[in-house]
Image (cartoon, rainbow, N blue to C red; front, top):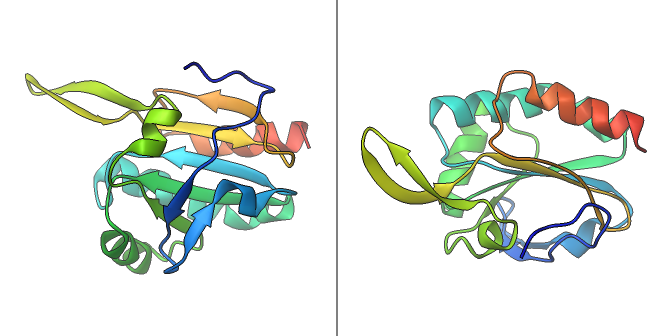
Length: 155
């Protein structure tokens, strides 16, 4: 099922790094930056998380909440947050159900091996819960600024 800009974003409910279960509908009335990343503690994912951390106040100022999603379990997310001082929630999608809903669970190739994993992607969900923007196959450098600029121009 392809996602369509302007239509309702797929709903989900996942365990979060704050020890609670989080639903997308919890954030109605706010812009949501939902970013999917492959794995905690890896170089690209750490850079991306720290970029979101460094711009967190700017997103908050635009009434936007950041949610990171990976297949890692909550306890690994907690270590990642603690190590890098991340001020936003990380969600554990261990069975990759949400990644599949958003179409980011893909066949990947690395060093001649094929495996299933997360394709780094970001989705902006507006205050009404509709998909406003998507970026797939994200390159980390400059991406957070691009997401921030989109929200500034479309609030």
